[in-house]
Length: 598
Image (tube, rainbow, N blue to C red):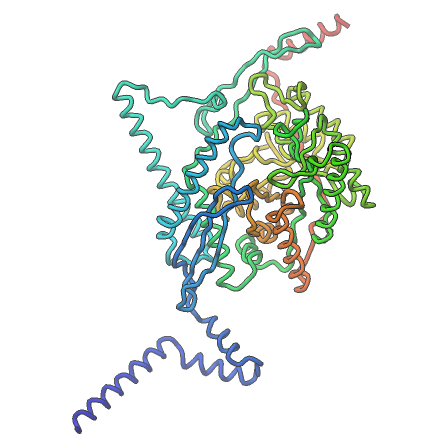
């Protein structure tokens, strides 16, 4: 009996020593003493809540433990990707982020034939399946144990995985081409007619097409040089999984840190929490036109309204709703009940033949609210120049049956904008390939409105590698969070373009969901504009409501600021190159011939 009790005493003593060592190693006694002493003086109402908050500060950093992806649906009823990200938080596995991806805009024009659209839809379905497989497989494995707050590290892991998969796919295609060549084939891939002028790799040489154009006034045949578009980047199926995982990590980080998402984004963008924060100015689409809409008007894809800087977001939405209702009622009066129905982004699609119709009705709507166009509310135009370019003729089809060469298009826009000073921004007035004419247009209108580039720039990841030159400039840049664009890419691209005197426009996609991530991101990154779609439909209103909520939170905290008045930097074209020998003489001869004819 004595030996048994002695053994028990020894075991109990050893156990106590282990406990003392364990608690000492983790600093428990010291921390207990600190909090108990300080709590007595703090005298909190919730004693245990106070203790919980104190020890939570000393808990291990939450790490990603699992990613779970499945099918979801967007506002167009198309399948998309729903993703849950779990983190280990204070020894418990918790759902820290639930993200639904937004559908990216189709790579096809909106007036595409149904059979081509079906092929695109099939590819999209395959992409969703591939994205889900990647998220549940390789991405889940590689992000386990990673701190979601280290956004740059997360995005590097994601892009490294994508580059590895891309290298494997390129190797597979090269192997198949070699095998085909060995069997007697040439290994060439058939080129679609619309892609014929866009062959070659980015940055490589591509030959311009020279097509005969006819100048009816002078009765002469003019050679039109068509510079082809840069090759479209071919993305792997499932590429959107990269963006989804990047967004999920950002959302999870804000959740485990128990801070608003916009504040977490701001910390990523600026390295610290800014003292003052701003809600973006909404760009709200009221009317959609362009080639896919009825009527002859092609050169304006979206007629948008933009409230003046400093207007509270709740007031902005109220006025945008009234402008939308005024336009809808006016269209119903003229064209019947069908005119009030909207498209995928909620925009109205009337049959217009010239841009003045859309501009006039918006100005009338603004005036009907006892507001002044160009002072209280502005107009922005998405011109989508690339979509109306005729590659065979080298001209822009501004209206049905009316085409203009780049030089005439410059005069067209200068004249129109001169008559409508309420226009505060134009997006993609022409292709980037018409650099000289783009800069001529900027020289004449950039001190009156923002000239914004959308499809003129590559995706953010490639934009970071692209050198900005004096030959092509903008005063605004559209950034989109989709496909393989990561949070890091967007934030770094925004900084690069802001340093180049560009205002940032964060834009939604066509197939949106009720996920309000973009509202928080726009606030956190201090984007000046958020291109939001129409002031109707649940997925668009969800963003507005989130902006109202954020604005109210910042106001209560005394941190709400507003964007300053619109300032338009004058974009000056680079000096023209000096003419080579012989060119001056030719110009003089032409002038003499013109003088003789007169």
